[in-house]
Amino acid sequence: MAYDKFDILTSSAVPLPIENVDTDQIIPARFLKATERKGFGDNLFRDWRYNQDNSPKSDFVLNNELYSGKILVGGKNFGSGSSREHAAWAVYDYGFRCVISSFFADIFRGNCLNIGVLPVQVSPEFLQKIFDAIAEDPKTEFEVNLAAQTVKILTSGEHESFDINDYKKGNMTNGFDDIDYLLNIKDDIQQFAKSRPF
Image (cartoon, rainbow, N blue to C red):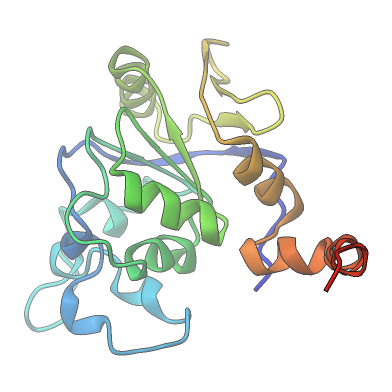
């Protein structure tokens, strides 16, 4: 399934300065029954967003109209816990295209890259600068440049580089998942297969 091509994302951000956010908090296990990658955004951070009677919790950031955007800024060790890919699906389906943190769980990072969500790992110091900028002005915009591998606070111009695997970077740039990538080089694969002796 192809996803949005990622080039330069300019957006405000939603701050979630909580460390060790695990995948069960991102999408509780009781919502994992669906097999399609749709509808999970409704239950992103479900137990943090809603009371037992399904009324919104006014003190949770996703219920605060001050904050919006396609960037989610999380605390250290974001996406830890079980390997459920549904957590990345929920982040994408809600509308986020980038998650910034000072550390990601490896499996969560991989699941994000497979579905079109860019995980940007920055230093703890720069992460704090991002949180501070949002606290000062919730409408502060950030620029995430995949080609240059940089994230910038537009109000101050401060920026930092981030790492990404070249293969995953290419897929994000083209909006490919792993199957799309193989389909894109189908002719090369067929030519190679023809060149091999049986």
